[in-house]
Length: 283
Image (tube, rainbow, N blue to C red; front, side):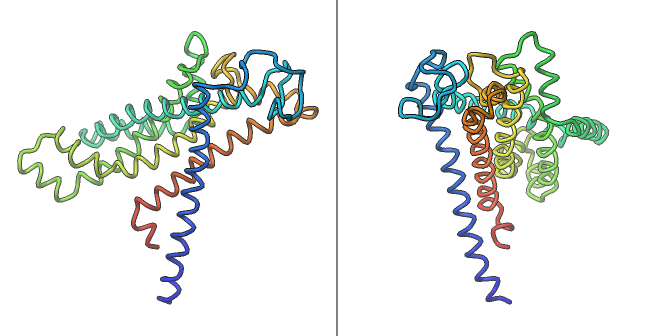
């Protein structure tokens, strides 16, 4: 039995390492593409550079859309938009969620119960539905309104996780010793609580990043995301649905880009979880 366990552990470690590096590769590819789009694009994204619905060629690597615009150029801009939305939404969600979670962990019992019940109600609603309500409440749909909406929608999940993790840390002996020595609550939070819960939160942030990217594509598909001329993957899918049988590459290319980024982020999060949590890597 011990020989089997010892043999299985290195195999699992090697498999986890490959998945982690695959996630780094997929995410890194989109990061490089998004950064490259800031300084170079094959064509003007709004220029009619070819015929309508052309197939892949040397001039247009992924073909053209129904207006004659280069699809590869739009895919590069879509990578930039997806990364912007993911980073922005996670930053907003983390700021609001961690703050609320810490306050709930330190609050009195009745206030903690009220906040916990409110978070449970918010989590019961789908993230996309909350984001749609926030965007619809704004005057006009824009990229920044979509980022704000997704950040607010994701904050409830982050707040609930932060509350649970912080309450576990607050019952530890070293917290009692810090309180006995006269340490203030802000000092306890920044020196003891946050450093101990940050590894788990960082893995959750990676998962929230993938969720935000998919949610933004859904909003753009519904016309509630980044408006034209922003080449969001969701808007590309919406525009290509009418020509999916005559020019399937217009729908396949943004779909593969969206799936590859989502899979890469999830593989990266799983790999980080295995590296950070020693109980999982030792099983």
